Image 1: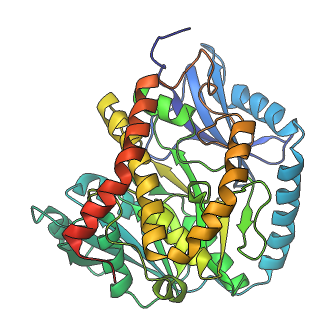
Image 2: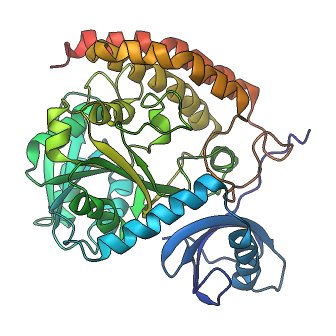
Amino acid sequence: MNSRPPRPLSVAELDLAAPDGPVLSFRPAPGGPEVGAGGVYALVRLRGRPAATVVGTVPDGEDPAGVLAALARERLARPATLSDAERLAEAAAETRAEAGAAAPPRTSVVVATRERPGQLARALDSLLAQDHPDFEVVVVDNAPRTADTRDLVARKYADRVRYVREDVPGLAAAHNAGVAAVRSEVIAFTDDDVVADPHWLTALAGPFAADPGLGCVTGLILPARLATPAQVLLESHGGFAKGFAPRLYDPARPPADEPLFPFTAGSFGSGANMAFRAEALRRAGGFDPATGTGTPAKGGDDLYAFVAVLDAGHRLRYTPDALVWHHHRETWQDLRNQAYGYGAGLTAYLTATLIRRPALLPALLARMPRGLAHARAVTAERGTAHGDGVPGEHGTRYHPWPASLSRLERRGMLYGPVGYLKARLSTGAPR
């Protein structure tokens, strides 16, 4: 087995006129360096719409766009799985229906942050460049130690960004403060370590205008940089991406391929790219303040909210058209912390769900045997779905997931319920 660390990759965007068509544009990922010889990870767009990712090596003296376009055409020519074909056909029908729909509703974008003004400025610049016709941006400064975030907003973004301070630490508490501060029909959430595609907010909020029963929409998250072994390793095992096939999750029609639905919340999306119908989120009780980064629970705030909204009878849609570029953590220790936090957040969210929504326990127990059988029958995979290009292949000699990180994740899972109960005691029982 090859134990060499993964090599850095350039990150780029390639836009094609059609699956077998000419190149419309080729450029580095937002803010990234020009692409030259060497390994490249590229988002493939079809006339602007995200369609796939490919990974390739550009030889010295070769045109990167030409090399990657050839790989992209090969990738897009492969037959889709039946489930992919069904979802893509559904998406095409929905796109036609939405073409005549009303403009996306008024939307508030909430960005929670803590002592990272440099990253926040980069995120805010991208958010203020959105093509959505009617939106606002709200920064929630969570348990600040300095005035740096407040000063940044006042100095650089006065009259364009609202500032809210929340002294209770934790991502969920910060998100709840954002919810309390806005009056828009739709509330979108993203993180301070992303760069949003200019069409992100329109794509994320638009489905709410077409579907009155929709409670939540999530979108595509791709890596902004793959410059360190930790970043490449995380993305090679899925990162935050959920694939390029749109999907609708309806509690009235549970998906056959997810026997534990709705408890498989990690497949629905991630907190760096999500939006809720404000009324649905508030009626579901908002975010559990005893979950999330910055609390002893270490995560799970987004997963809890997804399940809460579905449990209230609302639908959830995943759309790859809503794209943000995420700056993955850079160091090995960052990755260790992330693996532990993933495990803890998963079981913390399940604990929160069963404590705050005990009526769901019989459903979880009833689904467990079939869910476990399903899990044993499929190959373990951490993320980028349906065969999309990733830097390395899961479980192969190229970028094997270290056993030490798997152990940390399992340890985190054991700790999660304890962390959640600690957080409840420190914050008081959620309302």
